[in-house]
Length: 226
Image (cartoon, rainbow, N blue to C red; front, side, top):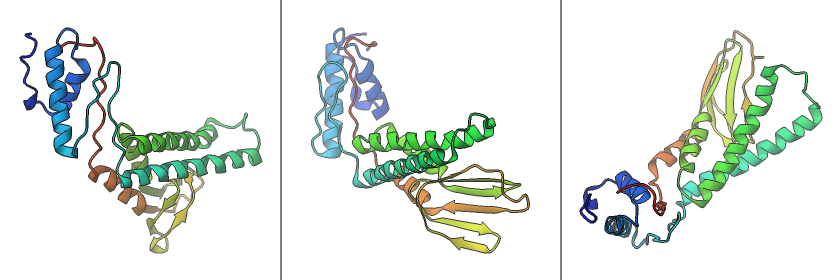
């Protein structure tokens, strides 16, 4: 491979990111410089002027996420924090569960895990519009369905929900505030209910529709090949 012969103008964004991450900048300085120049040109074309850091190690200029994305991040943080506080209070009242069945352990600690992930995801999504968006998409997708059938139930809300439910009593729209996690088996076997959380649907659409911010490209000194 001759240093400087690679033409990065034809690379897709993903290919260019991979090239910047893996080109050995010491062995192929011209290829590295050309890849950097192409990345900087694309950033300038899409976002005004957006310099690409050329320092050693892993660095880059971060754009703040769009306001709508930060709003969703704040909802994850607030909903997760509220849920952790409520479950901590419930555990304090309920007392120890050392002799409980494995189902009780799962139902008790799975919500806490999800809420902790929601807080961490919200913080990362607020700071940078990167991999945290995939986790946010997953968390909001979990909040869409409501189900009750054959004696089992599932619902998961963080902070605010507007579920449309169809079941006994017809079809109804509710507004719910607070954090809820229900993975129970104490529902009547004859009861059937299905629903959709409209707030989670809107949030998921926003996450999928709003373009990602330009992310920094990590550059590793002496890593990979051209």
